[in-house]
Length: 478
Image (cartoon, helix red, strand yellow):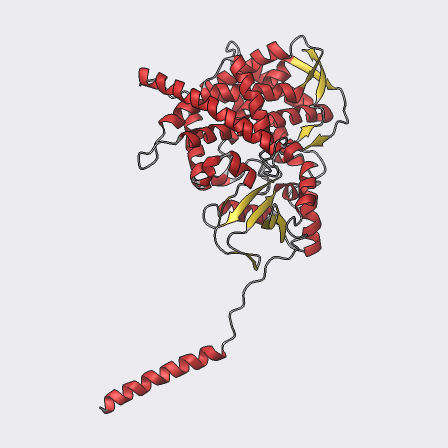
């Protein structure tokens, strides 16, 4: 009995000591939110953000607040969401290295409604499938065939739309070309009337991606929804036509993305639904033609504005053309030799980012720089602030392609026009090859002069930077 009472006494003493210790302990302090303001009720700071987005000045929107709050992360309210805005090399590294761990991609409401499969397909699965498709498409067995197709189509496009013309609007023609190539490569469509029909609808569809999702007759979003509905009807017919081809010829080689998405199965043997297939192809096409056309247009504009770099790039392209003989189409080895040209492209993208930033969503509470980003908050990562920071890019207002010429001075995670590491854009290599192939053909065949050297660049529909008049130029053949 004595031993029993002793054990009871010891147990009670331990419990009393535990309760006493924690009753006196200070409550655990919760980390503060990042500095900043949510702005006006409901609209927050959305209007100022969208205005800066349209004029390519998101970096100034971010810099102003970064300086005010003395922090590379601050809070605000955009598009009806609580948002933490990040900038800087460490922020790039943090966000890209924590994909699917702490953050996932986030699509604004307008995109979610235009791409219905986003309601039931997690974005990380969607991205993984896109990467799988593109890796198949760009493997060593297929890449030379892809480059050959791009080269031949570039030559035909320039023959049909540029040659013999005194003046052309570069952006309009390049966008038509990149769309035609994307539909040919991704879906095997070669009929010019069908391509033009799809092109008109896709232009309307893409304009609704980053606008207020007001589905009212006459609004940009309403028109985009209608165009999407019409496109899905046409895509359904295209799917059926390809399925018949595959049934009649089971050994039909997987020569394009359309066949790949129709025949692809997940780990459970499940095929994609028609909604998913359409959304996949919409994503590939929109991503494959608009940003690429913009980049080519900007590079051509910069080449005229920065003539000190023009001769070096021409020398590189002429040497490639000479070494190709008697071969008449480009190959992978030729693309790899276009180092000076690609460095110029990268500096253009640093100076005028085609994508000014990206949205993510916190999937759990995040601690960053001793601040809390609560689960469910949206994150905006600004590229422009980092790319115009003199700490990473000395004399950031000076145009200098040598930054990208492999001299080891480029700080990792500071230039991210296509993302970084395992979160790099699935279509990056496709875009790189297409840009270089088209520029090779333009430089080999034409000289041009801007009709309006002072033409401004805007981001209409908050998507990509476009010269206000589409960059009209006078042409002459080489």
